[in-house]
Length: 293
Image (cartoon, rainbow, N blue to C red; front, side):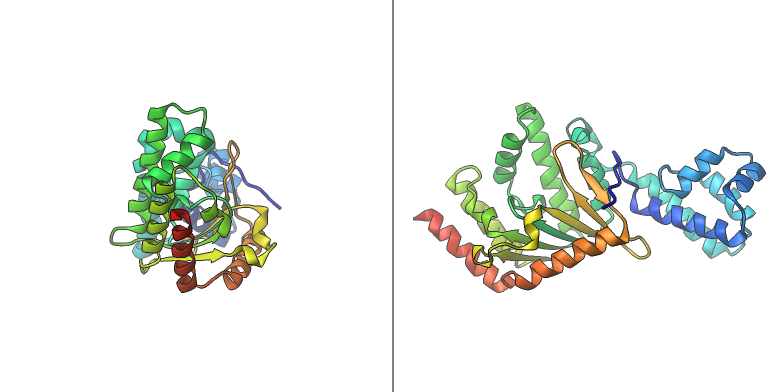
């Protein structure tokens, strides 16, 4: 399995730009060395731009388009729009929280999530961050991140709440399909009241048109999801999908088609065996009542 590691993965627009520029260069038959020589720019820099490892400027892109013979104004404008969009995505709302995000590379995930149109999340242990209540998030973060001070914990709680507003609300929300193992609801995080409130939020989330929640009951026994949590991110065409695996210090994203297809197959298997959304709501309500007894 190929793992690609990066502190801040390329934005959706940068990945699209990189693919477009490489496609245009390939169509001319020019090598990177030849392009670098003609434009008198560093070949290594051009290579990193084509790989999506760094951004670029409208000036350089116009020079590349001229060299590649792209005269159509609409095609030129489309490419230049990607340059501008990438620059805008490098000014994210979460930058002010960078001191607590960067150590776990979570800012990298947020950069990816910001451009995703669909999120497929599997969680065997915790409620997904996009569906957590503030008190549940606080309890999780304070226990999992013992290295953080109370103010830093509060900063991460704010990030989680802003994520929810940004990705699941507004005029153009992402769609989320979350599959949870029953252990997520049975594991008490915080007080009984914190869990009751969290379960109420899950039931309410099921009513949102862009959110689907399904539960894997204990009665299923072993299943492919026992390997661990993951998120599949779907982006606008032609940007390929990604898989995100979160770890304490070395979170990674997988971008090979083989890896993405493998996790997509696993997610589809989990979805087909999980309780349907209606049954899930009923089961959540029942477990919540059991907490009250």
